[in-house]
Image (tube, rainbow, N blue to C red):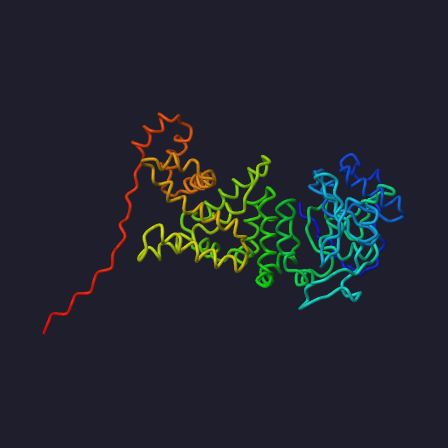
Length: 440
């Protein structure tokens, strides 16, 4: 059923907040972590205002289990730190306090005003680079990004405070900004990636104005430091919604801002490749997250950049043997990629190993297979071989052989080595020597 979109939130309307009493919402203290409750009650006891805020309130209202809990207060960071010995001050752009309870960290932030209202707020070319201007609860709510993230749970009376249209948008499944959308995106272009992440995670519809702006403003991501974009990529793809996120990034023309070489290959895809390989890698990652298993960004980077690397390898193979061509191609593709999204060396090394092991997996004679089983990156390389087979590359027989080989006892493995599919190795071309000129 079509529903009318609410009017844009002005952010300066001065309208009194909506107070939703305890009996009119679904948040229960039983679903709030013990650490977060300790922080809220201690701040309240010390005479400060204390609210649960942001994603935890949103998720609790949606019946989801929050991954973490954030607290907003009128106490300044140094005052918060005085109350909690198990805390430390962090951040330069946003000064925060982290209060630790065992493995749990509760993040405590002081109410902030808009960056233009004080000397400590600093903008460069429309982007916020420093923002430690403290304000009131009203000001703090109106400077947050999305309406559904500007809901506050008040520990004094257990009510929910809504300064925008957060509750209404939550019920509608609508994701939109507080204030002017273009201004918010120019202040911090990474918000475009947050739009995609929350839309994928929550299954929400993106506001029409944001939908219109993102393809045009996506170029602003080019100026974001690659190291920050790497952190954002982890948030995008490591929370169990990787495949939906990938599709939304492409829909909003943002994927090419992060992985230009990969998007170039996707634009020229034939018979679903390389999209199928990337989709299977994303499904693999989502499954591991859902099973509580560790995920490594190197695996996805290897999938995103596999086809660009193969294309470079084809070009280089005219003058180099297969192994050397792959090494050169990996150097070329990774060097270009880290200029856009940084990849720490410990992960780039693993990407190379996943790729180079694809060659070693084709060598199934002698002692090579048994030795390869002990390689620390064997499992990642084997999983990558499986998604290549699922995507339609001509390696299905090889993948089946390695699956059976791992499950066999040593005597059966020896017999399998003798009957393994063998790959013909291409001889390296030697340059012809120039003919000597005949003597005159």
